[in-house]
Length: 216
Image (tube, rainbow, N blue to C red; front, side, top):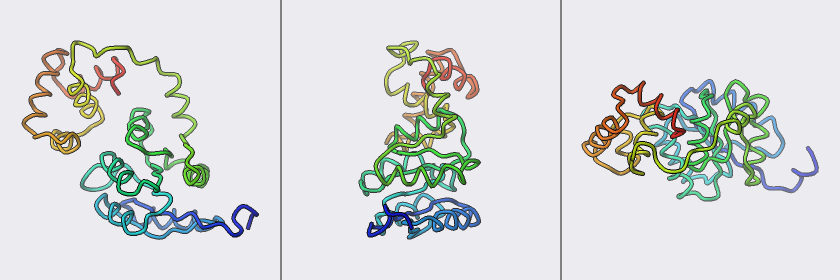
């Protein structure tokens, strides 16, 4: 045990991933570290929120892809209900757009599952100290991206930009409605206006447009 962990409170952790074998592996990895204590596990977003409310861990390790609701919209709720819990995203999503969205939502760490053995422990320690960790490759790709142009493209409103970004990130109309507290009919209306203004119709076209205009 190192000097820093002697007499210090353990870093309490909740692991949220829909695969039990992944949770078991992560628990073994984390509990092998001095000063770490895994206090609970969860396999979906609703259970994750209950576990965080019950245990108030210092760090939540959150998988982006779990059954039911997307994890991204849950991050702000978790941060609001448990402001002392830092969120480290652990995911297979290596697209910088997902990393940016997770950090915007309130996550403090973003680790790829393929690099979990090398990076997760460091990310958890930094998160417990309120410091950010971003997978180095993704960080380099984000830094290399051109700056976002000022002003919305094609006279899109701020709300339409939000809807377009969520469409490009793969959310359904129903998920967008839930995230933005709108009706599905309103989201469909926004989508129709976006398609008209951008002259793009398919999801693939909208994703390409969002990337071209740095909306992601």
